[in-house]
Image (cartoon, rainbow, N blue to C red):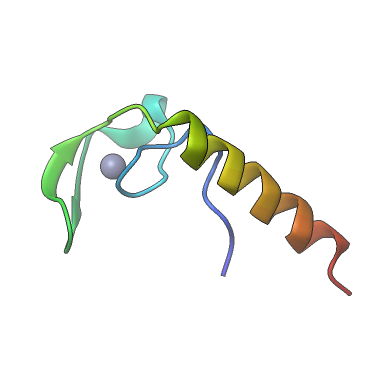
Length: 54
Ligand SMILES: [Zn+2]
């Protein structure tokens, strides 16, 4: 499993330019919504961890 783009949608992690309308179980149908600063930080950290994992 890959970590979503840090600036991807708050609900599904898809980038704004390719998002359009997406469906997730939790959020239902939605358009791109900006992630919170905390979410961006968490995703960046998760990505770094993935890269450094053997
Ligand atoms: Zn989304």
